[in-house]
Length: 251
Image (cartoon, rainbow, N blue to C red; front, side, top):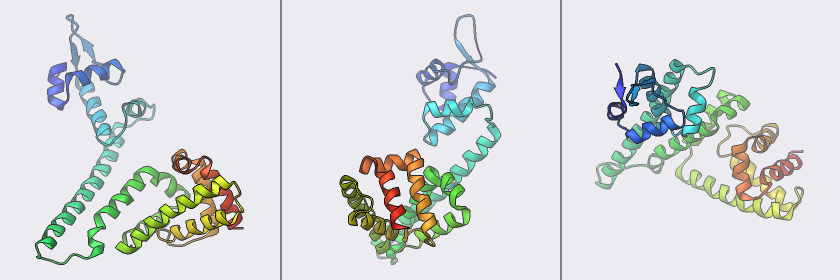
C-alpha cells in the first residue's frame, strides 16, 4: 500500500506541509518518487511516521526524535513498549484528575465532603510523574528504586498544610541561597543557615536522611546540567556554592 503526500497527511491527521518539512530536514523521506516528482510513501514510511508522532505527542523536539530513531541501537518494538508505559501513566493521571474534579463538583453541590488531602491528590501525583520523567533515571540509578518509591509515597502522604509548608520552605531556601552566593563565603552563617533549610526541605520528601546522601545530591546538582541550570537561575554558581557549603555543614 502506498500513499501520496495528501493521502498520508489525511490518514495521519497532519498537514501536507508538515510532511514536506519532515522530508526537508531528513526526518521522513518518501521511499520513492514517481516520474512526475510526486512524493510516494510506502509501509516503511507509514510506520516511521507513526513513531515520529508518538514521540511528538510525548513532548520530544524534532531534533530529539531524529536522533532517537536514527540511533544504531534503535528498537521499534521496545520504543512502542515504552510509549505504552508512558501512555498508561498519562491515562492513570488523567483518570485521577477526572475523579478529583468529579468529587469537587459533588462537594460543591453538597453531595459529599471532600478532605483537603483529596483536593490535592491529583496534583501531587502529577508532580511525581513530572519528576520521574525529568530526573527519574538519574535519581533511581543513584539511590535505588526502593528509596525513590518511598520518597514518592511520602510526598503523596503529605497533608495539604505540609505540602504548602514545603513549597514555602523551597521559596525561602532560594532567597537565602541567592544572598549567600552574593556574600561568597560557604562557611558564613547565612550559607550554613541555607544548608539547614535545605536539610529541612528534604525532610518533607526523603524517607530517611543521611549526610552522605545529602552530599551526593549536592554533587549531582553540579554534575547534572538540568539541576545546575535550576540553581544557575537562582544565582550564578549556585550549585557549586551549595555543594561547598554542604561539605562544611555535613562535616
